[in-house]
Length: 259
Image (cartoon, rainbow, N blue to C red; front, side, top):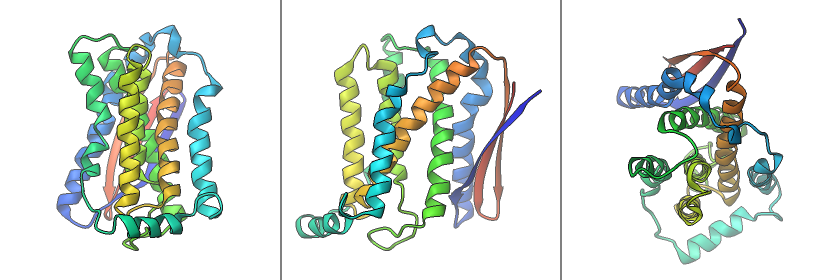
């Protein structure tokens, strides 16, 4: 039996037992759909099984713009954007993006509850969403630790890429994959919400423009990779085991898959 091990490192840095408990619960909630419903991927329709390189053009381009922009101010002049923000929106500050980043995800299940036709059943959606979340976490948080980019407000050195933006675009792209074909304008609305989150992160002086470009691309890429992984798993029986862990203030989770 082949065991594949996926682990996200240093997912959450905690400063209190309350935060540790909250993050531990979140970690479990993100992984339960994969652990409990993995076998349902075997019934994913044929339309999801084919790899289309075009699906990755926009996500990869956004990530490339973000990375290049963080290295070359001629591409995206983050300092100039921060100065403009200070001139026109000096007192802009709100915490709505902490909650609105998740808005597209419940929208998918709300449409399911209304009986609207989606690309997959709700339990398959949970599997695909759970995988996308794990992939996104595995990309975002290690990169934050490796790049150590200071935030515009100098509050910390984990600015690149933007996790809020990644989460928002993950949800918007997940909505598009499930309902974009039938309800394109609704998908446009979800992308608009995600774009608003990206703008608000810059206006809140929490991220550079390059951070949100990279975060948007990673969020979308996580969904594409999840659907691609789901297509691969269609032809294999597997039994996933989820192992959340907490040690020295650091949350992590591993997924063991026997093929």
